Structure formats: structure tokens, C-alpha cells
Image (cartoon, rainbow, N blue to C red; front, side):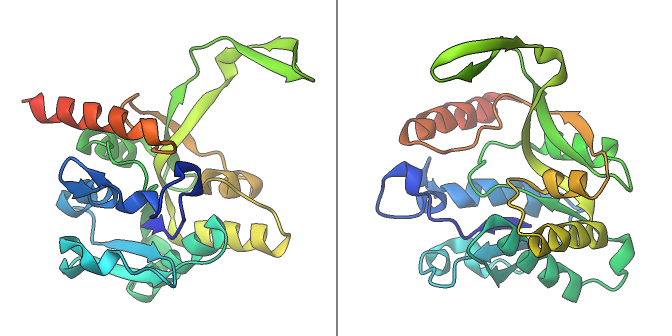
Length: 227
């Protein structure tokens, strides 16, 4: 499931970043492609903004394994909308696991997705992440307050994999308390679960600013060169 209802305002451009051109395709098409090709994934739910006019123009809009849902004002609302669409199509609700991926991560590889599927905990789930390698400083009023031990810190990526029913419950609980979450693991953590950290790759970048597009182009070109 891929929430793609955001406006990408930090890009400062005239269209949502998921529709920006990237090596001959829309960025979103790159983000979706690996999930359509892996045989153990039943399908992909894309969560779109209510006023989205761009998706219907893409070739993948007619793909038989893609379903769409309407997103909300916040990420959690959009993800819940997509999960509900998954639930409607699932016969064994409590046995379904769902991958949630950022629309703005076009460089995720098959190998990363497969590794996450193999290593994620059945009940607690898991997420791709990278251990922090830079020295970390906690700041206060523009000055260093302390140096933080980086050994305990990871940078969260996507996809993240969780059991459908547990993730829906966790997101609804956050919503009922007005809690803002920035990723699905955060909701699961608040519900008492301990998702497994699965080592990702530096290439799995999130396109946030215009200069990130050039970096995404580089990583995609590198992937094409690999045997």
C-alpha cells in the first residue's frame, strides 16, 4: 500500500512530487514497480488525493493489480483509508500482512523488499532502516547541548511491514487521541509492539527537495548497471 495523497510542498513546484518526471517515468511509477513484479505480493493500493488529476494520465493507472483509495488530510488518515481498501479485498483479515511504502522513495530494490519480508516479525512487524553513522549532536538555542550516543539510533525507511488488523487498530488508537505519526512503526510502537529493524540501503532515498531528484537518477542508473 502506497499513500500518494501528499502535495509535496517542500519541492516548491507546480505539481505533487510523486508525479515529477524521473528517467522517463513519473516518480510514482518507479516507487510502485517493484511491488507489482514480486509474485508474493497480491496487489498494490494507491491512496490518492480527492482532487488528483495526474494519476489517470499514467500508464500504470490501467494496471489490473492496482486499486485506488481516497486519502485524508494527514498521513495516518490516508494510510487507514488504504488499509480499509485492503481489508475489503481480504478473506482472512487476521492473516494478511501489508507493506506500506512512501510514494517518494523510487529507488527501493527487490532485494530490500524480500529481506524485509523474510526478517520481519510475524506479530511485531518490521521496517527497513539504516544505523546512524554520523556523530549526533543535540542542539539548544543554536549551540551544542550534548553529543548523543549514535549506537542506539536508526534512520527509518520504507517499506514497513505489519499485520493488517494490528496496524489498523494501532492507527485508529493514535487517531482517537489526536496523536500525529510520521510512520506506521510509530503507531505500532505506541501500541506496545517492537518492530524489527531490517538493514536497508543508502540508495533508498526519500525525494523531498528538488536536488534529491538528481540523486534518485544516479541510484536508478546504478541499479540498471547491475547484472
